[in-house]
Structures are given as structure tokens and as C-alpha cells.
Image 1 (cartoon, helix red, strand yellow):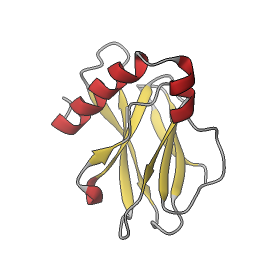
Image 2: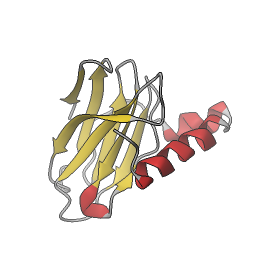
Image 3: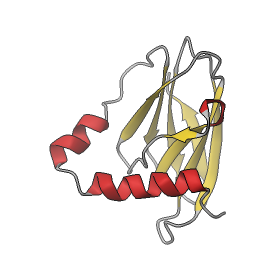
Length: 126
């Protein structure tokens, strides 16, 4: 599947993130902690880069999350799901569906994209 324009912007964000110092990247990659209310947190724990999109918030997306890292977005009231996608290692211009995270904004969400590009899974960690 080709990147949407929003996902393309996320790809550009990955390029910008990769140019930052290690300290700045560490600041955006929060450690695995309990889910916090009003936040959506996705971690890449598979062999591929992942990101989450929030269609109910105008399609905003997390930055691309490298394996072993996490990204968090604030949730607007009424947000009930996010689509998690992975990026092919061999062709970063293409993405694939990992799963849909269902939650309430008041409880937030913490999950991980696991597995491989051939067998991706979304796991709730909250």
C-alpha cells in the first residue's frame, strides 16, 4: 500500500528525527510505563518501524517509531480508536496494516506493534 499524504509527512518526520542528537531522540521515546489517561502510546517491538494514526483527530499521526522505541500523542475527547501501521524495511515508501487499537480517551491506550513485516500483530500493553 502506498503512503497517504499524512503518512508521507510521518516519513519526512522520521528523516528529521534521525538527524537529531541521541538525547533529543531519547526525549521523544518514552520508556514503557503504564498507560496514561488521555494519551495514545505505540511502541515498535517488532522487526519494523511503526506509527499510529488517529482518524477521529483529523488523521494526525505519531512520528515513525523505530524498533525498540515508543511515541505518544494526546487524545481529544471522543477519540475511540487508532490505526497502527508498519513500514517495510526494504521499501520505506510502502506501509502495511498492523491493527486497530480500540480505547476510550479517558483511559488512554498503550500498545505495541510486534512480529515481522510478514506477520505483524498489535498487542495491548495497558
